[in-house]
Length: 62
Image (cartoon, rainbow, N blue to C red):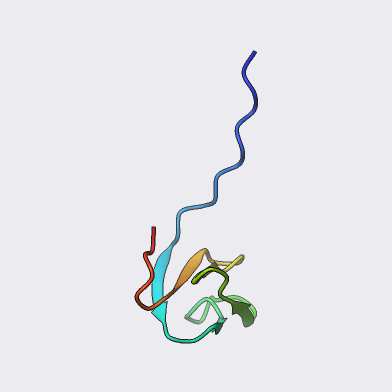
């Protein structure tokens, strides 16, 4: 019997480089989502609404 695998994170819809530790995401466009403020942890954070990945400039995206 094999152990169940851990759920995988969704693939990012877009990768955005930033120099800030806190970013705002609104889905970018008329059909976006509510504005959320996200804090980068270990140089990255993914928006829970649109899967946009924010990466600290100079950090590896993948």
